[in-house]
Length: 416
Image (cartoon, rainbow, N blue to C red; front, top):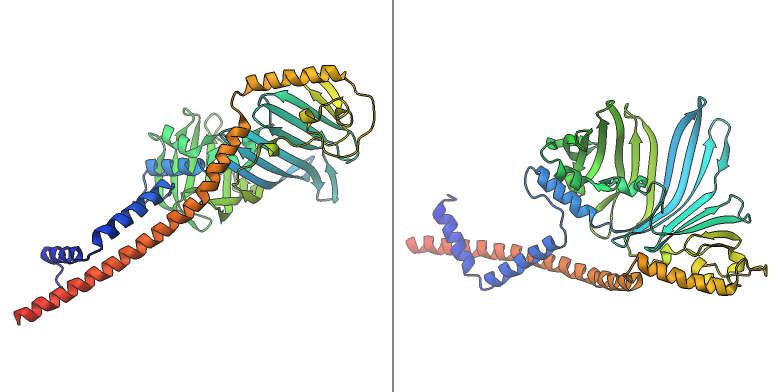
């Protein structure tokens, strides 16, 4: 078959004879538009540009405002030339843009040579948009506990940027897409067809942070441009400050891939620390999750109310709403504060909370949950539309080809 220009023209003329062509074309284009509107992170170009990768990374980063997971950090160090293994287990959750944060963790140290171990007090920290709770648990479950409540997010979590999810799409609190976009004059694609741990990757590198460091990052187009490896070198002492790989990828309900493991490497590419994440959830959490109840037998220092009390006494003085005391029996010990003073403090707390955050977080939560509930069936409908559109396009193409061949045979028969 001589596929000339006139042949192409006759092909499209045959296509126009299909009665449903215009409707099918409109249907297909609408499906493509809906697919793109649902944050499809795809680079259709043979060679992606720095701008393409930056946009894809930012698009992925924006879809993890609601996040909850359990984690285990394992790290091995030498102490007096003796290997020491530190293990931290916990749960982390966040809800943005509200800024709510929750972290509950317990640490222990293991001495592999002797098999001995030492546990440390557990720490629970939570910020609900108005106040911060710090709860220190003693190793013995029945021992007294200490808690502190303060206004605002100041110090609400020790090094929150150090959590593993902050090194999936971002460097601490700064998204990689933002870093690449800001320093796009310096960050360049070094290799379009690099490889990390058996997966194809695009390698980028450049000077960032106002000339203070060089960042090299490998992103995987097949995994919605997820960073497979990140490497930072500080210029002041030519030291590798950050070097890690991501692995054990899973596909989440939002359609994006996510690593369940981060492995930190030293300058010789030897692993020394790992973060493992499990039970990863993107479901919005209610505000009550970020207001955990205080255990009984907890001594509370409330910097908002300017009082101290024990949770065993709190129900006697009307502070259960402030301390969120767990249900259960409590001792009949004498309250540390006068009930009238406690009531007045509650009113002061309400005033300060209102000043701290004028938006009603619970109304905000309800509205967002409604939106989230509506989005899920909408996504299924969009996916169905895309499938129907693709099937229609294939059927349309086959019909057009058939008409084209029939017309061609008819013309040949006419010439005879």
